[in-house]
Length: 85
Image (cartoon, rainbow, N blue to C red; front, side, top):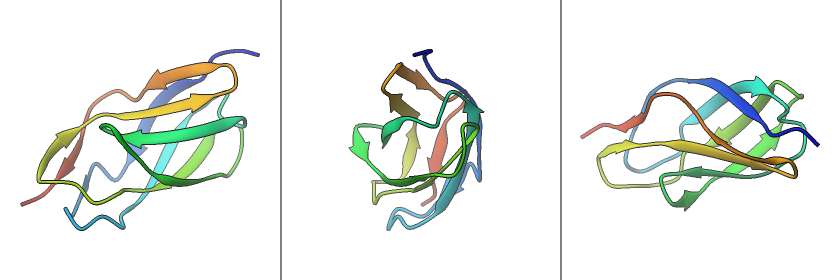
């Protein structure tokens, strides 16, 4: 099983209360077993091998990375997600 390759996500900002629906794109995503915003796990749904939808969890204002784990490995999305003040 090949490792995932996360190529991006949208939107890039959300509120500290959480709840922002984030579309994560890449390849090898069909066997996703976890998504984290920083160290906080997120609720997610696999839409296809190239798309995963995740709900940003509540966090303090600031920036975090988004990481995705599959049965083939893990990858961190390029850039950061900004929790607005």
